[in-house]
Every structure is written in C-alpha cells, then in structure tokens.
Length: 597
Image (cartoon, rainbow, N blue to C red):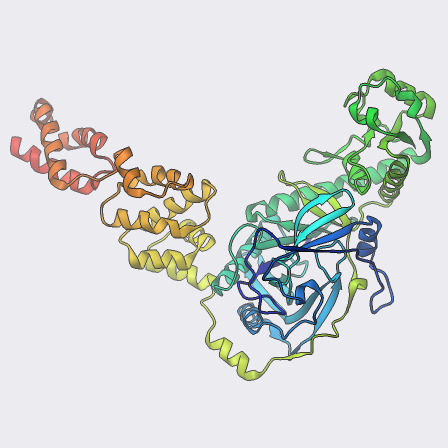
C-alpha cells in the first residue's frame, strides 16, 4: 500500500493577483457567460481529465459583484503576486524544513470544469524537499506550492452551470507528501501535523471548506487514485481503508472475469418490452436501451465498498449523460417486475445486462461510457479522481489528470526570493506544533490526550483564555467540545461564558445549557442564567444549607462520628453540586459536624 497526501488551505489575505478581498458574498450584480474549450499543453498533448470535461458541453455563467475587479473576470492581466500570501507560504516551507526556490515561476494548470473563468489555474512551487516527523517515521514533502482557489459553484440548470467568483483567486497553499505514508493512522497524523503548522501562521482562513485534504492511494497490482476534497480529519483512515478494500475487490473481479471468459455484447433497443411498465423512470423515457453482457451474473452486484457495488462504478461513468442505470443483479426492483426482467433476458439471450432509459442520444452515450468502464475492469483498477462520500466510500469523478495540463504563465514575471527576506521570515517563525504541545503539557499540567485536543482546536486561543480568565483547562475543553458538537465554530462566543465562570456568576454545570441557547441564537447570558437557575450561591447560603442537613442527620453523626462526613457529603452535593466548590462544602460540613460532637 502507498499513501500520499495533498493539503490545500486558503490564506487569509487579499486575492493572489489583485487587491480584492476574499470574503464570500451574496447578491451578485452582473453575469458573464462563457464556454471553455480544451487545448494542448506545452507538451503538445491534450490532458485526459480536461478532454473528458469538454465532452459535457456545458456553458458557464459567472456571477460577479460590484467589488469584483477585471483580473478575475479574465479581462485584465494579473497584477503582482500578493506579498503577504507568498511570505506565509515561505513561513510554512521553513517550518517544514524545506528548501526555498530562488525564483517563483507561475505555471498555468488547465481546468475547464468551469471553476476558473480563464480555463486555467495559476500555480507555482515555493518549497522543495520538506519533511514531517511522525511516530511512524518521517514523511517527505516534495513540493509546497502557492496557487489560486476556484470559483464557488452556485447551481446547475440543464446545459449551464452558475459560479460565484468571490472565492476565485483566493491564495491557496498546497502541500504534497511523497507516497511514504505507511498506515491509515499515520495519514491522519501527518494531516494533523501539517494542519497545526498552518494554524500557527495565523494566516489561514477558518471554517468549513477552507482546508481540504486530497488522498492518493494505491496497492500492489492496483493503481493510483486520488480522493479529492476530504474535509473531516478523522475520516482519513476510513477513506484509506475503504479504498484499499475497493482496489482489492476490483482485482478479484478482474480474476473472476478472466476465469469465466466474460465478454461484452451488443446494445439493443428494448423499448417495446416496457409498454405497460410501472417503473416511473422508464415510463418517462423516450428510449430504453440494454447492453448485453456475457457471464457477468453476480459480478454487477458484487460489493466493492461500503454500500457500493460494481454496478455503482458503471453508474458513475454513465452519469455524464443520465441520472443512473439498472443492471440485472438488482432486478426485479425499482418498479421493474420479474416478468419484465425475464423478457429482457429472453431477447438478449443473456441473464446479465445493463439498462439505460433516456433520449436515444443520451442513452447511447451513457452505455458507451458503461462499456468503457467494463473494458477497464478486465485490466484491473483504473487511475482516476474520486469524490468522498459521507460513509467513507468514494464515487468516480473524472480521470486522473496528468502533466499534459501544465503550461507556462506568460503574464506573471518571476518573483525573486532574496536572502534578506528569508532571514526576516526566520526571525518571525512561530513555535513548532510539537514543541508547543510539550510546553502546554508542562505549563498547564495537561495529560497528552487533553494537550492533543487543545492543539487540534486552537492552542493560541486556549492560552489567551488561560491568561485572561481564572478557569481550569478542563473547563475550556468541556466548553469547546460542547459548542462544536452543537455545530458552532466561533469560539470567541465562549469568552463571556469563561468570564462568568471566572467571576463565579455561572455554575460550571450550566455551561451546556448556556451553549445550547447560544447555538439557537439566544446570546443573552444573564437571562439564560436566571431562567434556568444557573447562578452560584454564596458561601453563607451554602453554610445554611449544610447546617440544615447536619441538624436533620444528628443521629447519623452521633452514631458514626467523623465517618459521617462521607455519608453527608453526598447529601450536601445533591443540593449544592455546581453551585459551590466541593472543597468548600467539605470544609463547612466538617466544621458543623465538629460542633455537634
């Protein structure tokens, strides 16, 4: 097994080649419509991924705003590269012990899925030969790049895709490892390590979608595939394991096809077999076509990943033209009866087939894609880019891009990296995440588990809270975990909670209730405390409660003496838990018991 990782993170600066802000906006004020065309690279080759996108024939509508400049409408040449963005990438490169290039040369990477108005993305190498140290061994970082982020897809309508260009041109740092990651767990560790270094720069955007991981995975006898856009750090091991499982099963299918001497037959028009069908999809279709297969029984329905079968792989390819397919291993079903399945079997003289229902043109094109994917099955595992699904499985997205999509950027001159700039950045380097974790453990008496959680959340925010408020680290962790579990990301909201706890104006047990209200938009902490009785009581009020409990249990005290403390402590805490410190309760209780003795 070989595993490589690519991490993309948005930088919190101006856009890469203009002075526009990178905030996401609503209510676009103008649109531009374009159709992108594939072209050859400097190698005089057409990239296979770009070519496949061109087959879709989509038009692209770009939604711009009053603040949108002409650079990212591709009506004006790019300006000088953003210095703050470049310095941030240099800082990360140095933290990863990478060699810095003498000059930054931008290249154009062909992208004609519509996400770039110009049909290409600008990218450049900044650092080489970096390294990540992990408990499983070192992982090499061959390249660290700076590039432009893409436009945001807004919606899709028939032959047109709508894009917002507010995100287009946001600087991205891309960090690529070598395929030297050895285990799924190490993959997560590497991603976490790099993520912590990125956060340490304080120049990384925060929020969903601002940091994305791409996984490159292959096994012996398989092929390199790329899982594009993994958002959840903890899902990385699952995606790796599921992809290994998929490739192993595809290799088994290859062997089984060879053993059976399976084959691909002709395409048949079977529209007349479904005149009285109850299947809604088929009933609406102009044509129903079927692809005859030989000796495929059971293979189309073979599970290759969680909730995914080989038939799912065929459907992924067909979705360029139709919403989905039907295959013999899943019938009867989806409104297709046993009788209808038998009719198809008789006409094709085969119990294995794939059915597509659509217009004649789309159905034919979809089945040609199915044939293409089946032919690949006889070879094994195809190289491709796949999209992550929530359950840890993946779906086909497009062929794996190659070097044929790169060509020089002629509008941006080389950017010189001086020794003075490198020395300046070295003096400003933040503390390495691993060093910071060790320091936090010593300084705040944290165990490793809690220190790891703090590093994953926001160690700088943690230290700010520890300086400003008199609370324990466990209170910080509890509040952050609760707030994030409620789907809230803005940790700044927690400051008022920590302030109230620090000033003994909120019981610790009330944190969850307060944060639940915050998550609903109710930020009036005074009213929340009052409505739910979350205000701590004074020491004198606690003393009255404890005196009453002692008097009520005089016989227990007379019988057990000092041992009555442990018995009555439980009674006291039933009333006072969270409203007054347990140590104070214990002291008052011992004093009151001593009076009776």
